[in-house]
Amino acid sequence: MREATQGFNTQTIRGQQDAVRVGLVLLCCFQFQQSTSIQSKYLTCHLCLSLLDAYLHYSFGRPVLSLRLPAGQQSRFTVTPMLTTVGDLLRDITAKDPGVHTASLLNGDGQRISTCTFMETVLNKDFQLVINDVTHNVRSLGEGSSHEHMLGVDDMKYMVRLLHSALTLPQQQHVKHGELLIRQDTLRQQLQPLENVREKLAQEANTKASVLGWAGLAYLSLQGGFLGYLTWYVFAWDVMEPVTYFITYTTSMAFFGYYMMTKQDFILPQVRDRQFLNFFHRTASQQKFNVQKYNALKEELAEVEANLRSLRSAILQPEDAKQPQKST
Image 1 (tube, rainbow, N blue to C red):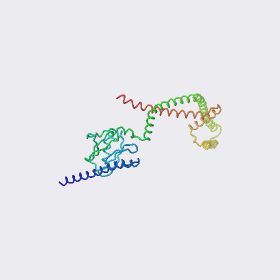
Image 2 (image 1 turned 60 degrees about the vertical axis):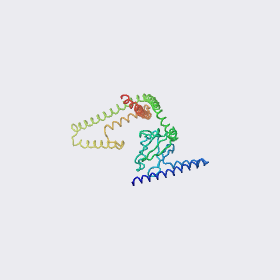
Image 3 (image 1 turned 180 degrees about the vertical axis):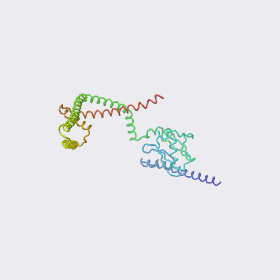
Image 4 (image 1 turned 120 degrees about the vertical axis):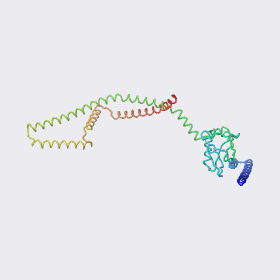
Protein backbone atom coordinates (compact mmCIF):
# COMPACT_ATOMS: atom_id res chain seq x y z
CA MET A 1 0.00 0.00 0.00
CA ARG A 2 2.88 2.35 0.91
CA GLU A 3 4.68 1.58 -2.39
CA ALA A 4 1.52 2.29 -4.36
CA THR A 5 1.09 5.59 -2.52
CA GLN A 6 4.72 6.57 -3.24
CA GLY A 7 4.31 5.67 -6.93
CA PHE A 8 1.13 7.74 -7.09
CA ASN A 9 2.88 10.70 -5.45
CA THR A 10 5.81 10.43 -7.88
CA GLN A 11 3.48 10.39 -10.88
CA THR A 12 1.57 13.36 -9.44
CA ILE A 13 4.79 15.36 -9.00
CA ARG A 14 5.89 14.52 -12.52
CA GLY A 15 2.52 15.54 -13.88
CA GLN A 16 2.73 18.87 -12.08
CA GLN A 17 6.26 19.46 -13.36
CA ASP A 18 5.17 18.67 -16.91
CA ALA A 19 2.21 21.04 -16.60
CA VAL A 20 4.47 23.82 -15.34
CA ARG A 21 6.93 23.12 -18.13
CA VAL A 22 4.20 23.22 -20.77
CA GLY A 23 2.94 26.52 -19.39
CA LEU A 24 6.42 28.00 -19.56
CA VAL A 25 6.83 26.79 -23.12
CA LEU A 26 3.55 28.42 -24.12
CA LEU A 27 4.68 31.63 -22.45
CA CYS A 28 7.96 31.51 -24.34
CA CYS A 29 6.08 30.99 -27.60
CA PHE A 30 3.98 34.06 -26.85
CA GLN A 31 7.12 36.08 -26.10
CA PHE A 32 8.67 34.81 -29.35
CA GLN A 33 5.73 36.18 -31.32
CA GLN A 34 5.92 39.52 -29.53
CA SER A 35 9.69 39.88 -30.01
CA THR A 36 10.86 42.15 -32.79
CA SER A 37 14.66 41.84 -32.85
CA ILE A 38 16.45 38.76 -34.10
CA GLN A 39 18.59 38.55 -30.97
CA SER A 40 15.58 38.53 -28.63
CA LYS A 41 13.90 35.86 -30.75
CA TYR A 42 17.04 33.74 -30.59
CA LEU A 43 17.23 34.05 -26.80
CA THR A 44 13.53 33.26 -26.44
CA CYS A 45 13.86 30.20 -28.69
CA HIS A 46 16.90 29.00 -26.74
CA LEU A 47 14.98 29.43 -23.48
CA CYS A 48 12.07 27.41 -24.85
CA LEU A 49 14.38 24.59 -25.84
CA SER A 50 16.09 24.58 -22.45
CA LEU A 51 12.73 23.92 -20.79
CA LEU A 52 12.32 20.67 -22.70
CA ASP A 53 13.65 17.41 -21.26
CA ALA A 54 15.12 16.26 -24.58
CA TYR A 55 15.72 18.18 -27.78
CA LEU A 56 18.14 18.32 -30.69
CA HIS A 57 20.16 21.32 -31.76
CA TYR A 58 23.43 22.11 -33.50
CA SER A 59 26.69 23.00 -31.84
CA PHE A 60 29.82 23.72 -33.91
CA GLY A 61 28.20 22.14 -36.94
CA ARG A 62 27.28 18.82 -35.28
CA PRO A 63 23.94 17.54 -33.92
CA VAL A 64 23.77 17.60 -30.12
CA LEU A 65 21.14 15.87 -28.00
CA SER A 66 20.38 17.84 -24.82
CA LEU A 67 18.79 15.57 -22.25
CA ARG A 68 17.65 16.01 -18.66
CA LEU A 69 18.78 12.86 -16.86
CA PRO A 70 16.94 11.28 -13.91
CA ALA A 71 19.48 12.84 -11.56
CA GLY A 72 18.21 16.26 -12.65
CA GLN A 73 21.26 17.45 -14.56
CA GLN A 74 21.07 18.65 -18.15
CA SER A 75 23.62 16.77 -20.26
CA ARG A 76 24.71 17.16 -23.87
CA PHE A 77 25.59 14.25 -26.16
CA THR A 78 27.32 15.06 -29.43
CA VAL A 79 26.21 12.83 -32.30
CA THR A 80 28.20 12.02 -35.43
CA PRO A 81 25.45 10.83 -37.79
CA MET A 82 27.48 8.48 -39.98
CA LEU A 83 29.59 7.07 -37.13
CA THR A 84 27.46 7.05 -33.98
CA THR A 85 25.00 4.18 -33.59
CA VAL A 86 21.95 3.95 -31.37
CA GLY A 87 23.87 1.61 -29.07
CA ASP A 88 26.68 4.14 -28.71
CA LEU A 89 24.26 6.89 -27.72
CA LEU A 90 22.47 4.67 -25.19
CA ARG A 91 25.78 3.59 -23.67
CA ASP A 92 26.86 7.22 -23.30
CA ILE A 93 23.58 8.08 -21.57
CA THR A 94 23.87 5.11 -19.20
CA ALA A 95 27.48 5.94 -18.36
CA LYS A 96 26.60 9.60 -17.70
CA ASP A 97 24.03 8.88 -14.97
CA PRO A 98 24.11 5.73 -12.78
CA GLY A 99 20.42 6.28 -12.15
CA VAL A 100 19.61 5.26 -15.73
CA HIS A 101 18.61 1.60 -15.55
CA THR A 102 16.94 1.14 -18.92
CA ALA A 103 17.24 3.19 -22.11
CA SER A 104 15.92 2.65 -25.61
CA LEU A 105 14.97 4.50 -28.77
CA LEU A 106 11.57 4.18 -30.47
CA ASN A 107 10.50 5.47 -33.84
CA GLY A 108 7.37 7.52 -34.44
CA ASP A 109 5.22 4.34 -34.55
CA GLY A 110 6.50 3.18 -31.16
CA GLN A 111 8.71 0.39 -32.54
CA ARG A 112 12.10 -0.18 -30.92
CA ILE A 113 15.09 0.87 -33.05
CA SER A 114 17.99 -1.57 -33.28
CA THR A 115 21.18 -0.63 -31.45
CA CYS A 116 23.14 -1.23 -34.66
CA THR A 117 21.26 1.50 -36.53
CA PHE A 118 23.27 4.61 -37.33
CA MET A 119 21.99 7.91 -36.01
CA GLU A 120 22.01 9.19 -39.60
CA THR A 121 18.78 7.24 -40.13
CA VAL A 122 17.25 8.15 -36.76
CA LEU A 123 17.81 11.91 -37.03
CA ASN A 124 15.79 12.23 -40.24
CA LYS A 125 12.48 11.70 -38.39
CA ASP A 126 10.98 12.35 -34.97
CA PHE A 127 11.76 9.66 -32.41
CA GLN A 128 11.14 8.78 -28.78
CA LEU A 129 13.79 8.30 -26.10
CA VAL A 130 12.62 6.05 -23.25
CA ILE A 131 14.63 6.26 -20.01
CA ASN A 132 13.46 4.31 -16.97
CA ASP A 133 9.97 3.95 -18.53
CA VAL A 134 9.79 7.74 -19.04
CA THR A 135 9.22 8.71 -22.69
CA HIS A 136 10.82 11.83 -24.16
CA ASN A 137 9.58 12.99 -27.53
CA VAL A 138 12.45 14.36 -29.63
CA ARG A 139 11.72 16.39 -32.74
CA SER A 140 13.89 15.89 -35.78
CA LEU A 141 15.99 18.69 -37.19
CA GLY A 142 14.68 17.94 -40.66
CA GLU A 143 15.44 15.36 -43.31
CA GLY A 144 18.86 15.80 -44.83
CA SER A 145 19.87 18.43 -42.27
CA SER A 146 22.48 16.11 -40.79
CA HIS A 147 24.24 16.08 -44.15
CA GLU A 148 24.31 19.86 -44.26
CA HIS A 149 25.58 20.45 -40.73
CA MET A 150 27.60 17.32 -40.15
CA LEU A 151 30.90 18.99 -41.05
CA GLY A 152 32.13 22.50 -40.44
CA VAL A 153 34.17 24.57 -42.85
CA ASP A 154 37.49 23.38 -41.42
CA ASP A 155 36.32 19.76 -41.48
CA MET A 156 35.24 20.09 -45.09
CA LYS A 157 38.61 21.57 -46.07
CA TYR A 158 40.38 18.73 -44.30
CA MET A 159 38.21 16.12 -46.02
CA VAL A 160 38.85 17.73 -49.41
CA ARG A 161 42.60 17.58 -48.77
CA LEU A 162 42.35 13.93 -47.79
CA LEU A 163 40.34 13.07 -50.90
CA HIS A 164 42.71 15.02 -53.12
CA SER A 165 45.71 13.22 -51.62
CA ALA A 166 44.04 9.83 -51.94
CA LEU A 167 43.16 10.45 -55.59
CA THR A 168 46.40 12.07 -56.71
CA LEU A 169 48.97 10.24 -54.55
CA PRO A 170 49.31 7.15 -56.82
CA GLN A 171 49.70 9.37 -59.88
CA GLN A 172 52.26 11.54 -58.08
CA GLN A 173 54.17 8.44 -57.03
CA HIS A 174 54.38 7.18 -60.60
CA VAL A 175 55.43 10.62 -61.86
CA LYS A 176 58.10 10.83 -59.16
CA HIS A 177 59.23 7.31 -60.04
CA GLY A 178 59.66 8.31 -63.68
CA GLU A 179 61.62 11.43 -62.71
CA LEU A 180 63.94 9.40 -60.50
CA LEU A 181 64.54 6.87 -63.28
CA ILE A 182 65.48 9.67 -65.68
CA ARG A 183 67.78 11.20 -63.09
CA GLN A 184 69.35 7.80 -62.44
CA ASP A 185 70.10 7.28 -66.14
CA THR A 186 71.56 10.80 -66.39
CA LEU A 187 73.86 10.25 -63.43
CA ARG A 188 75.01 6.90 -64.76
CA GLN A 189 75.84 8.46 -68.12
CA GLN A 190 77.82 11.22 -66.40
CA LEU A 191 79.63 8.71 -64.21
CA GLN A 192 80.51 6.27 -66.98
CA PRO A 193 83.59 8.13 -68.37
CA LEU A 194 84.70 9.08 -64.87
CA GLU A 195 84.29 5.49 -63.77
CA ASN A 196 86.56 4.28 -66.58
CA VAL A 197 89.26 6.76 -65.62
CA ARG A 198 88.89 5.91 -61.95
CA GLU A 199 89.33 2.19 -62.65
CA LYS A 200 92.56 2.89 -64.55
CA LEU A 201 93.87 5.13 -61.77
CA ALA A 202 92.88 2.58 -59.12
CA GLN A 203 94.65 -0.19 -61.02
CA GLU A 204 97.79 1.90 -61.38
CA ALA A 205 97.76 2.90 -57.70
CA ASN A 206 97.19 -0.72 -56.67
CA THR A 207 100.20 -1.77 -58.75
CA LYS A 208 102.41 0.88 -57.16
CA ALA A 209 101.28 -0.08 -53.65
CA SER A 210 102.03 -3.75 -54.39
CA VAL A 211 105.47 -2.85 -55.80
CA LEU A 212 106.20 -0.83 -52.68
CA GLY A 213 105.25 -3.79 -50.52
CA TRP A 214 107.45 -6.17 -52.47
CA ALA A 215 110.29 -3.62 -52.35
CA GLY A 216 110.02 -3.55 -48.55
CA LEU A 217 110.15 -7.34 -48.42
CA ALA A 218 113.18 -7.36 -50.71
CA TYR A 219 114.93 -4.75 -48.53
CA LEU A 220 114.36 -6.77 -45.34
CA SER A 221 115.56 -9.93 -47.09
CA LEU A 222 118.75 -8.24 -48.32
CA GLN A 223 119.33 -6.70 -44.92
CA GLY A 224 119.03 -10.05 -43.17
CA GLY A 225 121.32 -11.74 -45.66
CA PHE A 226 123.93 -8.99 -45.48
CA LEU A 227 123.96 -9.04 -41.67
CA GLY A 228 124.30 -12.83 -41.72
CA TYR A 229 127.22 -12.62 -44.14
CA LEU A 230 129.01 -10.08 -41.95
CA THR A 231 128.35 -12.11 -38.83
CA TRP A 232 129.61 -15.51 -40.08
CA TYR A 233 132.18 -14.65 -42.76
CA VAL A 234 133.64 -11.20 -42.05
CA PHE A 235 133.25 -10.25 -38.37
CA ALA A 236 132.37 -12.16 -35.21
CA TRP A 237 129.05 -11.88 -33.33
CA ASP A 238 130.67 -9.73 -30.67
CA VAL A 239 131.30 -7.09 -33.34
CA MET A 240 127.89 -7.40 -35.09
CA GLU A 241 125.74 -7.40 -31.94
CA PRO A 242 125.94 -3.60 -31.37
CA VAL A 243 125.32 -3.09 -35.10
CA THR A 244 122.08 -5.12 -35.03
CA TYR A 245 121.00 -3.25 -31.86
CA PHE A 246 121.35 0.13 -33.56
CA ILE A 247 119.56 -1.17 -36.66
CA THR A 248 116.63 -2.36 -34.49
CA TYR A 249 116.60 0.94 -32.59
CA THR A 250 116.59 2.90 -35.84
CA THR A 251 113.69 0.81 -37.18
CA SER A 252 111.73 1.48 -33.97
CA MET A 253 112.36 5.21 -34.39
CA ALA A 254 111.09 4.98 -37.98
CA PHE A 255 107.84 3.30 -36.79
CA PHE A 256 107.39 5.96 -34.12
CA GLY A 257 108.01 8.69 -36.69
CA TYR A 258 105.31 7.11 -38.91
CA TYR A 259 102.86 7.29 -36.00
CA MET A 260 103.74 10.94 -35.31
CA MET A 261 103.17 11.87 -38.96
CA THR A 262 100.00 9.85 -39.67
CA LYS A 263 98.48 9.43 -36.15
CA GLN A 264 98.00 5.75 -36.99
CA ASP A 265 99.65 2.54 -35.86
CA PHE A 266 101.94 0.78 -38.28
CA ILE A 267 99.45 -1.95 -39.24
CA LEU A 268 100.29 -3.45 -42.61
CA PRO A 269 96.77 -3.44 -44.20
CA GLN A 270 96.24 0.18 -43.14
CA VAL A 271 99.69 1.13 -44.39
CA ARG A 272 98.95 -0.43 -47.75
CA ASP A 273 95.57 1.36 -48.03
CA ARG A 274 97.23 4.65 -47.14
CA GLN A 275 99.85 4.20 -49.81
CA PHE A 276 97.15 3.21 -52.31
CA LEU A 277 95.21 6.43 -51.64
CA ASN A 278 98.40 8.47 -51.79
CA PHE A 279 99.33 7.06 -55.19
CA PHE A 280 95.72 7.38 -56.43
CA HIS A 281 95.31 11.09 -55.56
CA ARG A 282 98.79 11.92 -56.83
CA THR A 283 98.08 10.29 -60.19
CA ALA A 284 94.57 11.83 -60.33
CA SER A 285 95.98 15.33 -59.86
CA GLN A 286 98.51 14.68 -62.60
CA GLN A 287 95.81 13.52 -65.05
CA LYS A 288 93.31 16.28 -64.05
CA PHE A 289 90.78 13.81 -62.64
CA ASN A 290 88.12 15.64 -60.57
CA VAL A 291 87.73 13.44 -57.49
CA GLN A 292 85.25 15.84 -55.78
CA LYS A 293 82.91 15.78 -58.77
CA TYR A 294 83.09 11.98 -58.94
CA ASN A 295 82.28 11.62 -55.22
CA ALA A 296 79.36 14.08 -55.47
CA LEU A 297 77.86 12.19 -58.42
CA LYS A 298 78.26 8.86 -56.59
CA GLU A 299 76.52 10.21 -53.48
CA GLU A 300 73.67 11.66 -55.52
CA LEU A 301 73.27 8.36 -57.40
CA ALA A 302 73.14 6.46 -54.11
CA GLU A 303 70.47 8.85 -52.81
CA VAL A 304 68.39 8.48 -55.99
CA GLU A 305 68.59 4.68 -55.82
CA ALA A 306 67.53 4.73 -52.15
CA ASN A 307 64.53 6.94 -53.03
CA LEU A 308 63.64 4.56 -55.87
CA ARG A 309 63.68 1.56 -53.53
CA SER A 310 61.43 3.26 -50.97
CA LEU A 311 59.08 4.55 -53.68
CA ARG A 312 58.81 1.13 -55.30
CA SER A 313 57.96 -0.47 -51.98
CA ALA A 314 55.26 2.18 -51.41
CA ILE A 315 53.81 1.58 -54.90
CA LEU A 316 53.85 -2.21 -54.56
CA GLN A 317 52.22 -2.27 -51.10
CA PRO A 318 48.64 -1.69 -52.36
CA GLU A 319 49.13 -4.37 -55.02
CA ASP A 320 50.42 -6.83 -52.43
CA ALA A 321 47.39 -6.05 -50.26
CA LYS A 322 45.03 -6.79 -53.17
CA GLN A 323 46.56 -10.20 -53.98
CA PRO A 324 45.08 -12.09 -50.95
CA GLN A 325 41.64 -10.64 -51.76
CA LYS A 326 41.88 -11.94 -55.33
CA SER A 327 42.94 -15.37 -54.15
CA THR A 328 39.95 -15.65 -51.84
